[in-house]
Image (cartoon, rainbow, N blue to C red; front, side, top):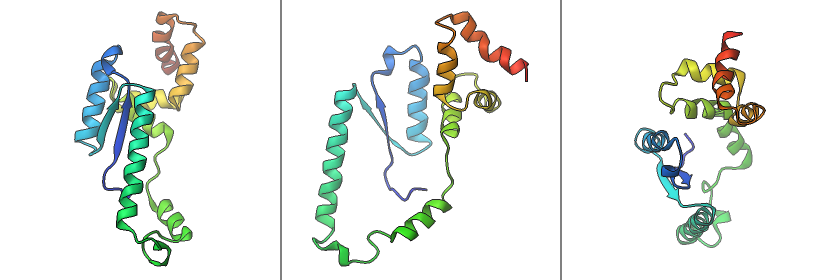
Length: 153
């Protein structure tokens, strides 16, 4: 939808160190195979910054080789701003809540209905994390939080 030929999804850190390692690996696999992304993994922030720098240099080099020095005289390289805005408005917009729903559905036994119920209460991961943090690490209370709130609806 974006017009880009190769979409990259970056995963920072080692998923094996997380309690949700299998879910993370499944999400990466799904993103790569079904969604067509090139999933890149980095070991941490330093490695991520190095990867971004490398990608930036590669993009700059590509355009340096493929565009004449005075590419401003060419038409069609980049659309005029008004055309760009029009094209963007025609795209299906994905909200943060949409992305959060998709992430939730990567968790085993979380169906679309469950994800929608969670997002109705907590539209973003941050809002859910903030609600959890108010429970000050009480795991039982955290596990019961969504169940109780969904029963009150």
